Each structure stands twice: as structure tokens, then as C-alpha cells.
Length: 163
Image (cartoon, rainbow, N blue to C red; front, side, top):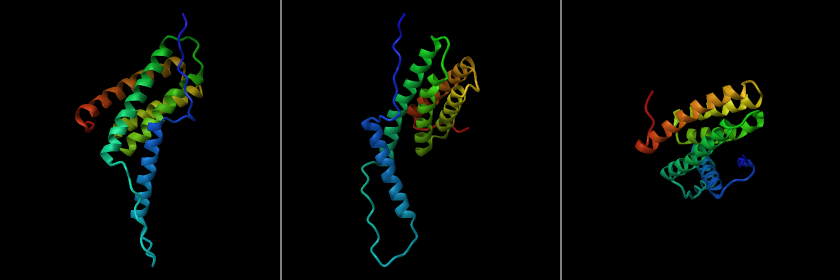
């Protein structure tokens, strides 16, 4: 019984990932320019043209998060069928959790951000063998299920429930 294993390389970014990074950088540049309180005699710098509105960023977030959550679910399903799991197999959870955590924070989806942070933390601890593989898989299963539920609510309503 041969299972195909997913291969992930942190150093490779898709065109969508690069577009998101460029949009974040452009928005950061705008915020820095607008918050600058230094008065000089030279003309104020012109704001950089931004091709992405906040609504565009929400759409990008939803598309990217959907892919990341699906990758988390696939990786979890793979681990469920393995024995003698090496700690390095949890890197995919740490990386996707970190990515979702950061992008959810940017678009102010705090519940998604918190759950993604938990996924990242569980994976980091599993990689350091602080948690056993079995406990890590159970915790990841619960966290990913919660993340999927919150994400579905965001897709359906555009917002998270208030807690």
C-alpha cells in the first residue's frame, strides 16, 4: 500500500502569494506615509498606487485560507493512516497555521487568527516532541475542525460570531 506524500517547500511562493505580499507591502507603505508627522519644505510624497482595495484583500484571504485549510485537512488525513510519525511531519501544520494566523489578523478575523495560532503552536510543540504524535493529531483534528466551521461561517455571512 503506497501512499503519495505531499511535498512542501517554504521557499517557493505561488503567484497568488507574491501578489498578496506585494499588496501588504503597498498598504504598509501607505500607512507609513499617512502616519508620518514630519513636516518638511519639500512636497509631500505621492502615495503609491494600490491595485488592491480592502475588499480585494478579503477575497484573496478567503481564497488563500480555503487552500490552506484544505492542505491542513489533507495532511491530517495522511497522518491518521501512518505509524511511527516523525516530528518533522508536523511542519506543514506549523507553516499553514502561521500563514493563516497572519493573514486573518490582517483582515481582522480574530477567531480564525486564534485557532490558526493554536494549530501553529501544537505543530511547533509536536516538532519539538513536547507533545506525542497521538496527542498532537487529536489536538490538530479538533483545531482544524473548529477552523473549518469558523471559516464556513465567514464565507456564509462575511463575519465571525461575536464571543
